[in-house]
Length: 252
Image 1 (cartoon, rainbow, N blue to C red):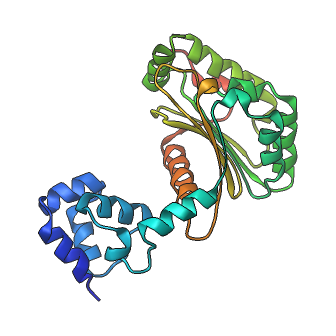
Image 2 (cartoon, rainbow, N blue to C red):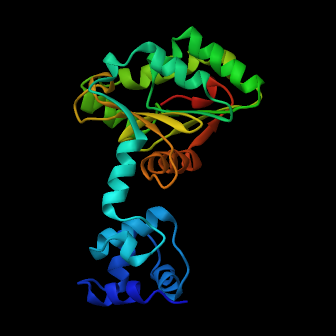
């Protein structure tokens, strides 16, 4: 059954179909399929509703309205810390201790974590018990890392921190269930995931990540915040380059 509300909203908008598609990040033919009745992925629903200036629940009855979405987002937020430096150490280790199926890290360097012997032990134990461990660091030879180093005022030290972190992880390379990749993506957040929980360390221009806020988020039915960050991790992971050892990096 065609989505007449979506069709009408597109006709009422100030944009042609190509412009709408570009803003959402899809092909115009994809939007035509949505109008014909195919349901978009949730993130595309929200992106399209935003472009059209509509509530997502108006365009798709199965989605909750703005007030319900806000309330659910507040329920998803477990804690908010003003700076990473004030997050108790046990918060990080307790998070990963609870992991059963997924243990993910997305950072530029995360050097402080690579120095933690308890974290290294947890990774080994979780992998031995069948968890999927994915460690995703910035490519020290990439433009994004160079720019982040410049933004923080530490220059080449950012790339050096990444290389040193990977050396710290040497004994984890080759373990069944543990994968390493490097990315060349501009990160707006560092993401630390254990199953249905996330710690999100926001990035602020010109400020080291240890001074930026951290959000503790849990997945809830009908919630969207956890899914937003989890999907972001997947997009970076899919474009990243696998590493079999720290020496795979090569020289800049």
